[in-house]
Length: 102
Ligand code: SF4
Ligand code: SF4
Image 1 (tube, rainbow, N blue to C red):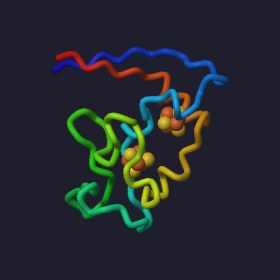
Image 2 (tube, protein in one colour):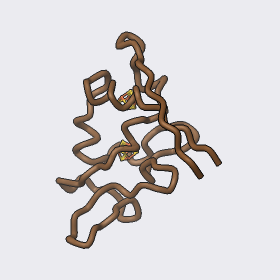
Image 3 (cartoon, rainbow, N blue to C red):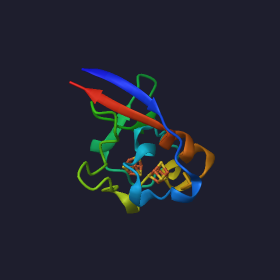
Image 4 (cartoon, protein in one colour):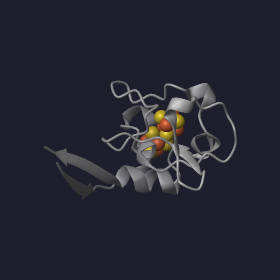
């Protein structure tokens, strides 16, 4: 499998989570507080640090692949709660289009 990365700028006025394929759910999400994330979605590194588990496709394991909705919304990590739609970080993630070539 190869990965191609395209950069495309999305106009700020068009940015909404409802027309996004959960770009921010490809990021590494550190667990810094206990919000009740189910254990099966947590990856633990060799030093005991916890992050959201990401699957082979690059997205968080708690993401519904059909709807691009968070399946643990009420228990999502603090970092996910703080990630604001249309923020600089959001725009940056949306500009990066990852294309999987099999
Ligand atoms: S916060 Fe931004 S990157 Fe994340 S799903 Fe919403 S629009 Fe997409
Ligand atoms: S916990 Fe939910 S909001 Fe956070 S990265 Fe995973 S799917 Fe996205």
